[in-house]
Image (cartoon, rainbow, N blue to C red):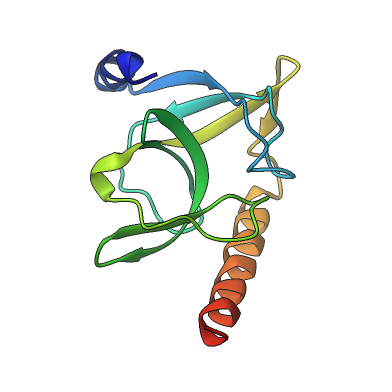
Length: 134
């Protein structure tokens, strides 16, 4: 996987985006495995609630940004029970700005902004409850 990283970074620098097929289910129900993602560069800067692609070990991960911390970004898959460890900003590759299913634009849609806020507040509440109990 990491052998593709220089190519993906070059594509981002040259054309501002690349396409990536989602394989895992950690973003269910928002994103289904097999969805085709268009990933744009990080400019403008990502913000809480964005779905991003980042490098973790030897693979690409697609999760949602919850909040910025002093160590980087707290991320969380919509279908995961717990947040990820903080992701350094240098590991962020790009922001998902379009999703296609069966060749048709699936996301963003009319309610994408509301959907983004729903997941963001849901995760912030879960994080508050999780840290309060530990």
